[in-house]
Length: 252
Image (cartoon, rainbow, N blue to C red):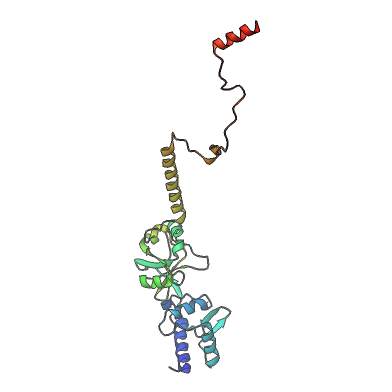
């Protein structure tokens, strides 16, 4: 395929994604129909034959094609013809199970407090687990896929909206309404367990050494290099009694 034909094919693909079925690719346009260029490039990186496309390629398309199907504003892009763009609508009967992918690092907090995204970003769910995992990998190389039970969510008064055929949206998903894999061991908890093991080992060591005295080098006298001097008068032998008697006789 020559370069010109490739640009034409790219124009058709972008037209389909941005003007007709952004939901099929996990994209949720804003009120003006824009999506993040970064997110669009992630979509193309997942599509066979288009992994090489960069922002410069899209700019080249806009310059080379007389009637480019897209327009860019700062870091956002949208299709020019949005007549067939799907719209967000109320969903009264969502599928019994939906799936969403989250960052692995956020899982312990999400499992406790629920899925609560930024105010301007809803929770994006899909009825297909593989799609949820693919969308999750755009945020994390090893995402955690959660299974949302919509009947339980309804009991918690969660309202779902639907965008196109493939995306379901919610402002908040309570922790009681979804299930997931076992929680990973928290680093802090692991540190506490390690600290407990260390303290236990120290206690055992102290018990084993109880009743003993550890000799430190400072407690040992340095080696003596000469004989100690005897104290005056110490160790002097007393004269026998017969010698004392002779001394008395001489004095007389």
